[in-house]
Image 1 (tube, rainbow, N blue to C red):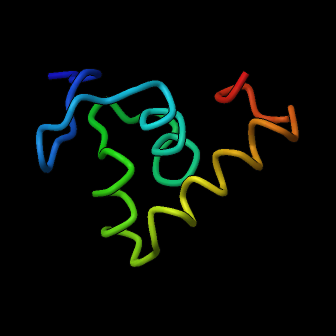
Image 2: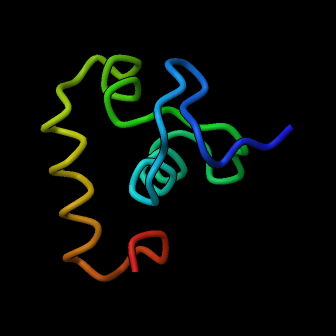
Length: 67
């Protein structure tokens, strides 16, 4: 069942950026998501690295997920 409101690992409330970056980096057609902290842990990177990618995609204007 689709869950667009909470992280599938920790249950944290998701924002649009959480959903967009998960779709961009993991699976475009996903219907369950990880929050930024859990996604960073899953990928083995820092939260700051994920936030930097979000800023990059938003500022580039080329990704429909971040418009």
